[in-house]
Length: 257
Ligand SMILES: NC(=O)c1ccc[n+]([C@@H]2O[C@H](COP(=O)([O-])OP(=O)(O)OC[C@H]3O[C@@H](n4cnc5c(N)ncnc54)[C@H](O)[C@@H]3O)[C@@H](O)[C@H]2O)c1
Ligand SMILES: CC(=O)[C@H](C)O
Image (cartoon, rainbow, N blue to C red):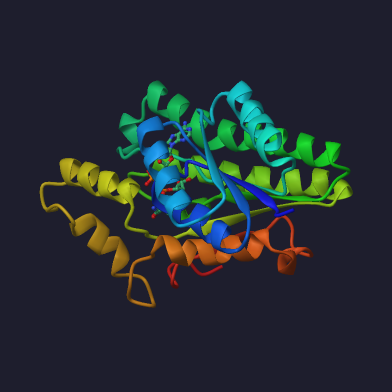
């Protein structure tokens, strides 16, 4: 029986790249997203490449949706081995303009989502007599706090903290909890960040915020979903069995820790 992985927010962007890579690694993969139309498209595309995948629609910020996601995975594939808490959203604004709505929205999805996903996956791993891997989307913004990305950076620092505490508590069940921390990847998320940054700075033209951030990368190229998936593939494999509670940077040399 092949191993089973869930990847949240995998209809597009980094999640889609991770789902495809885990499919290539031999996992049966449950794709999950709030965007049902895009999710169906991606599931059809990956099935067309002969990967063993299904799609489940849901919202990571809703605890019931996360438990339902794990149930659907187990009903369909019989077990669960890896849960990737990938879904996340961004917000761009000066610190003095951060609103209650922005704080609630970002924390609900980026932080509550990771907590609920971890709880749902860990409960299933424990039912299966332990062992399992939880892999969270952190960011360079979980190591540095960026101007205009204050709320987003705070949520990623919280992801780092929950990665540490969950790793400590779940180790007794042989469950590992780690996080990948990407740098600057050209997904829809960065298209939106770039667009918003232009609105707040008359000197910036479209594309320039992305270029400005990318120009500081030591390896001199922006990140692809495949770069991120390489790390997640390792964290999902037995080669990472002795690693837990780590938030690992994959950023081409941008933040040095
Ligand atoms: N793109 C980057 O440069 C970058 C850098 C560091 C970290 N990250 C992190 O990587 C993850 C993926 O980022 P991305 O660039 O692929 O983003 P993206 O916006 O391109 O894709 C995110 C996916 O998540 C889905 N999603 C959003 N809210 C959801 C919800 N409530 N429930 C379920 N699905 C939901 C979206 O529909 C979308 O398909 C995020 O957690 C992000 O913070 C991205
Ligand atoms: C979007 C993200 O996490 C970094 C700032 O690129």
